[in-house]
Image 1: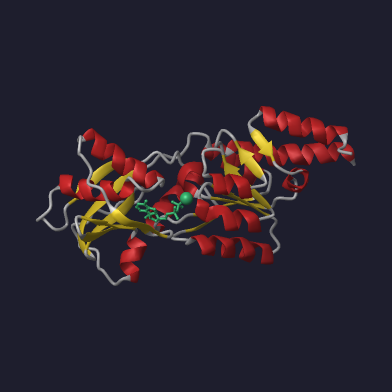
Image 2: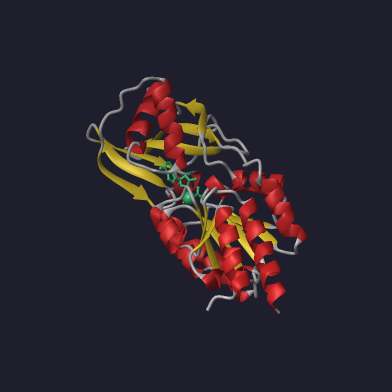
Length: 288
Ligand code: ADP
Ligand code: MG
């Protein structure tokens, strides 16, 4: 039988938008010593807007850059895709259809448009392929920049800005005050990760982390004796959520993340994680 105090606590959590999929997860929440947040959509709103487009190859216009990128992003559910599509809509572009669409896991997307291969990719992908970033490509601390390749030649860049959630700072402060280490693991680039980490006062961050590396981050921390809670929203995050002591999906996330997680935050609010941990501690303190 479930002790009454636990039953009540779980019900109260649900009222506050914290869905607990198994009781062990709630029991474990009080043991959490480190929380690893993903960035996009959890610590930030995940609501990207295009701030700057550079036609690195001047044969193409800014509109053509958005047109090609937008064509690919019609097939993607990533928040970056939504940002690029917003711009295409604003400019009333009618986007060409694509074939052979595929994700380059944690690095971007690829497809054929009009018989040519187009890619929209991260700075990390360029580095890996030894494609140098010219000086006229825009780079900025807090913004995410993606690059457009046509037949593997760099033709443009698109910068997108996201915003830190208003609730994130307080959530981090509450966790830190309670002796819990607060970290971030993101697929985004080093500069953006550093800027967000500094603004929020995180203990540590991991940038340009590929999906399978998120699992390694969790394992590494566990080896150091931490009891890890991990948040995520994407298909990519499911393995890390499964590995963590407590896997937390945010409500706006993909079905796969939600199905793998122990706990679901309906309101995608990082403060609810702090709430949950403190609530778990208080509940079991009453029982012993
Ligand atoms: P995160 O969830 O931390 O943002 P992801 O693994 O989802 O990490 O993405 C990592 C990086 O891969 C992004 O910052 C971006 O550079 C690139 N990327 C992923 N998906 C897309 C996409 N649909 N369009 C453009 N870039 C993408
Ligand atoms: Mg993601």
